[in-house]
Length: 366
Ligand code: ATP
Image (cartoon, rainbow, N blue to C red; front, side, top):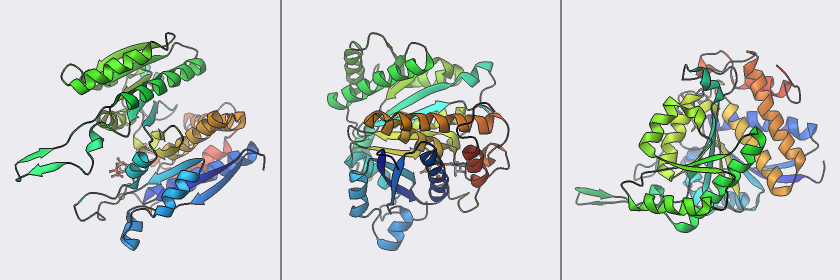
């Protein structure tokens, strides 16, 4: 083991969260050996079944472990039949986002070679953009605080702050700079809002363009949420980094996943100033849990995002290389036609895809 030793809080959670986490940790252990890295994986309980067994969605000790760890690897939590008394689902991941101030929800949407795409255009294979979902305020600031008056009027209040909008905007421009370097083209950041109707969004857009001045080498644009929904179907290949309010990001990231094969191909990261959590965009999928057919790609790519983030945070080139190697291995596994996952009409289950990715680590070409 080298001195690149990282402590990872591992939260498999419920349903296919547990299955895809096994896949991701197998790939992590494979790259750990190849790049002489060191990871200490600490299994951290939590989730709907944990709530059913203990009466607590996530023990305080899990929050403490997550807080102390270098990064959090998260599967999926929640189960339709297990709910709080008020009918809401068990979702400790939302508490983690708020408690650890993970304001930047990074959701890359990229066409993986060999994976069937929703759009027939020849440009569809060029889809490569990132939805940057603000994750601590917006409409979700009202979570648990909504009111219903006399069974007649329900209210939820949206919150947009200068501080978080500035942080999100800086994050977006820096991400665009990094992507521009890797892709050899100018970065483009498009703020997505509804500023023609709501003051909160006009304010958000104003703050975004103030921050944009510090990044003259990146192009800054804006788009309305409704126009964006249309454009993501008409020409998604034209976009790069898309920062937006929490609820808008929640919705458009599922649309984005639908463009590139579905939830099984959509990784994500929730990043704050000090902490970061990496999880697939999908949930626990009770309909397919326990059958070994979950697509582990989103979880494996989320783990690769963790390696990339750790590499950036700690100046570890080996971590960054390992992350790129995983992404290349996934492209090679699907691109060669060696595997096709069940969610896109194939026959290959979690184990077969995981093995195909591990076999291709460090090998170039298909
Ligand atoms: P949540 O409501 O928390 O988002 P969910 O599991 O109900 O969780 P999604 O995660 O959005 O909903 O998934 C919807 C459906 O997509 C699942 O029920 C499942 O059929 C399919 N699905 C999601 N993730 C995967 C995956 N990794 N592999 C295969 N199918 C998946």
